[in-house]
Image (cartoon, helix red, strand yellow):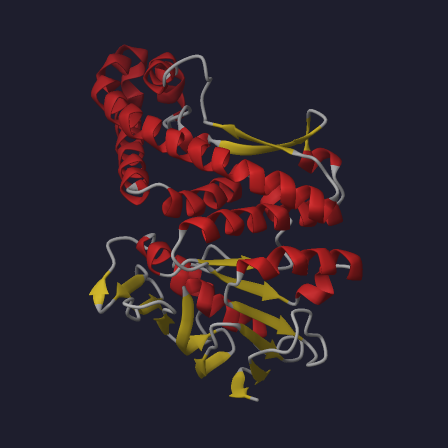
Length: 363
């Protein structure tokens, strides 16, 4: 689904901006530090409830301002679909507020269903290099769209995990004798955790054909993409929780479960982050995102919007051509940045915007 209208107030250096985006190729031009990437952050914020550059949303608020507001309206291309109004507000010291069609969203995850958006930026290699948290977030975003009801399963598991961890901290002073009191929390957590893990595994299975084609085509590498569910495969989650009760009591937190899951990327049996160069990690991470988009393009009524932060600067000419060949068949809305109007790897833009010192004008 494409984004049409975009309105921004007080996001980094962009104090005020109004953009009417095209459902095809949108190019944002400006010098380094002009605010190009901030516009991409605003769009990403509407579809994810967060930035792709920081986990602390308050850092997005313009200096000396108390809040930021981003509003958008989708631009459906098929009848009888109607535009969806999206709004998000980040206020210092307060929870982030999101609205969909004028109604408060129960969770920020609901934004992902209303406006699917993905990004490829200079920090994309962190998807391979960093902790499992990023890879769990990667698989969960796809699973939100592949598995009906996954948002509710994910929210229920997260809530049950918080309750069990709170109970662990309450019982810590009682020692191992209190371990049996965790049984009711174990049962609830195991129920939702098993469902969550099954959904993630199914999504990864569905991704595999797209993944192999993309990573070989773009990176010339044949890596395995393996799901680790967060506990041993030869036991149930309930059994794993029962076995780890004393250790959990000592630590005050839950060890086993999908919150500790990961996506292992292996080359010749070794983890990719231990063997690949930074450049190779970037290509592998881009392949992960493209495989995800290729899968969703077959499932969703309209493909997700893709944000690209100066791709011509991040890929060598040969890889850039391969990258374009992978993206073009998606027929998705593109919003890409560049420091120069002449760098348009996807051909002439349908709409061009110039950014200077946070001010945006359409060319």
